[in-house]
Length: 467
Image (cartoon, rainbow, N blue to C red):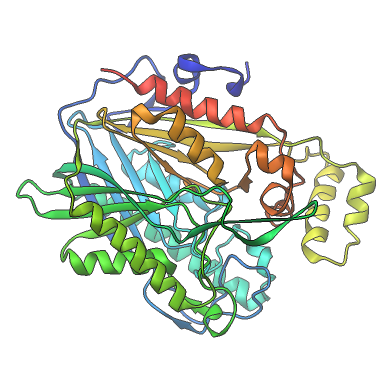
């Protein structure tokens, strides 16, 4: 039976990856939540040597020649008294691919006995960080010397990802956790309707998610050790002009700096929400990124200054990969026509499909999307999904799973492409169709993907409820 054809506890029992004593085992039931969770933290500077090409925009034609502030990778490790471990890794970059992450995850398995699903790299989605190998590399059409530098930086970053996970696993301490919810209003839906077309712009009437989830982590003596926060919005405050070629962690890094200045000794760690069709407004300059970072930090501080909900107990976790099918791929005539296109990205996509066909290999017909649920006691539930997930999913899960106190996290594990909802598939536009040119797929997705993804994650949550 296809994984996504199963629902409810069946899906969890038969396909969920559970963590027991740091080793993946078959799902034989729900692990009872222990009394408390320990937390480990580590931070590494992953700023690049300059100049270097930046990710996120096909129109950016030259490398970055200066940096606004350091880029970081941060690890937050959780451990139950019985030994289960899970690691969030917050990365200042646009995104990572499955191919880029494969050697990182392999080393985490070999060195730390952390199986698939136990390490979730969450990219901040700043569009002002370096291009990575095998991750939308051709979007910027780098020269041969630029590609060599991209490879060097990628190798270094892969090493730092492994190292920061190991460092976090060495710093476990007892912790007290508290959760709260703030609000920031600079996120705006970017899908604007002009006749029968959907274009980029500012749509004040479009759906957004202005929630700012916050998790405060204290040491036994009450000192704040870490502040985890999130928001559902692209890292695209900087767009064009003199700031377009500056390395920056964007508004989320500015927010992090403000929070750490207000809480000396604490680590502020950002987990990106599901806002793939959401942009900051206004945007254009680093000044806009600074003002958005200040507003986001203010929302977090407002939560920290009020009474917060205690998050009690250990964590339970389930992982799966949900198959999301495309519509049938185009025929050879269409591919050969696209291979003669004046658009280099259209041409490269077609050439890749034709190369597969000529070699007798199947062309892509689906994406296997990583998803996970991390439930801390009965008080907080992280919903993690790979890909650029649009805001409709976060809003729907928050309605369906309100009793579970959901915290949606996107850009987790890897980013194979955009993940549109049925609404976007019907409307068309960049997130639903044309973005797949850069990801090397012929879309769009089949309309069944929303129910497949929503049901798959909801089933994992259902399997983790209760004692």
